[in-house]
Length: 130
Image (cartoon, rainbow, N blue to C red; front, side, top):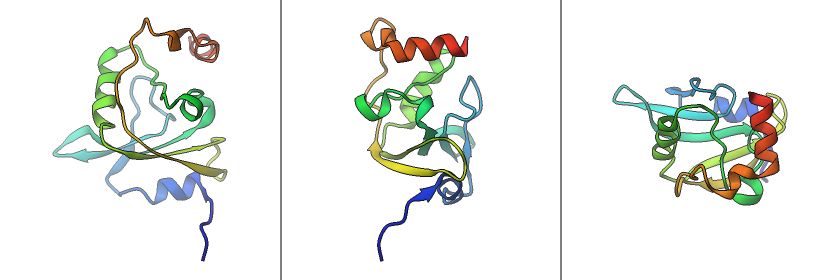
């Protein structure tokens, strides 16, 4: 028995039944699957399942891009990912094969003055989302 690559649909179906996809402040389709704990919607993230096009810095630099206009959303996501969680990357389609990139946890929030904010790929994505 060997390991078989999974599709996005299979990975998402395997998540706990109380998990859901975060869907505010630009998170819809960004793959942060969160567990509801004691009625709080973003207590813990149980997996990130995301198209690689949404996360251009993740594979090479280990940096997840969080899109939204509220700094508090970044803080909430960082708190919800303070424990190691599996990260799956793929082309995005539900029937496309996903790659388990590894287990990641948030170490810090990248400040706005950081050079990563001026990375050409990040700037291009920001322009496209504006």
